[in-house]
Length: 450
Image (tube, rainbow, N blue to C red; front, side, top):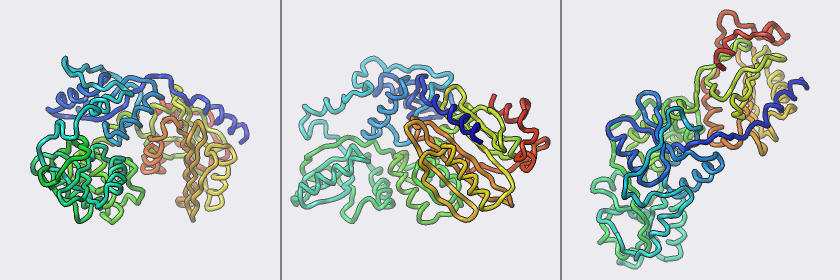
């Protein structure tokens, strides 16, 4: 086992990526794709498009170095200039640069504060657009209103501040097109983000603008029916919004997550259209991550894994070991052997002793255990469970530079983990004794890694 520990540790130094990456911001399909691409190119000078499966077109910012992309993603999300579920991928195959049309002088270079500079010389009413406004909250004092505005802008950087005819202060969002405001007001109410003073009002009824904010560009309601709830729950978990059971049941936690994600995603004010858009974003992400079905012949376990980033190394001591492909920094260990609660705890002890999960936080119950921890280079997560008299376990090692994707990858793996042996597999009890799985150059594990 000590030799095995050195093997895994030797896999971890290659965590840093050197290849350029793209900050993926959207996926579109249909006749309006070209217009959406043009819109992104008008705002950013380095935009790329790339083909996705099912006729979809991916849109990204870049290429750039990964560290620059991480900083740019954080900045643009904080400013509300890209969707909250945007993520970083290596430059996809078939990616092509897009240039803004001549005369689009407001394109923002990465790291620039073009909008801030443009607003400095504007008077409070300069460029104030016609239309309705959402009054989100009302306050009696300027001090409390300023504090509330700062909080709102963490999620809605476009929020503004008005002084009303009665002397109070209103936090606003607008302008919005006729008919759009009421739909979004209902979305804010469903998420319990506004109270009894929330309303849709024309600018004339709001009084004097103190801080105009910016146009939130809220889209109208769609017509999509609510997708199956189990798919909705998986998409919400992928977005970091839901950590409950995937049971297809519309309970309070699911409903709250849907309402919160409608506001965060801003794809549509109605839940059906918003959740359909979220599911499509998750599907595009799965394609870009190279998620495919891995069948491990030694353990008989089958699961969804990012095989573009993993390759089979060897079987040892009953463990199937997959190391990083192309210096991805990822690794995966699979295990299945006869046992119960004690054997499961022995497996988690081995995981800790070998340092696969650094300084782990543990959750242990009867029949299941979960460990997660991180250091400066990687995130380790181990999951184990007792099923039909056997211990099934996996360890995912993932580079800390791609921390946003780690919980998503782990969730995909755990959702799909099954014992599904096929003809020719080595039984778990034989593998535990160091059986013939040690030399298996022609197994399906090799095929999956190629």
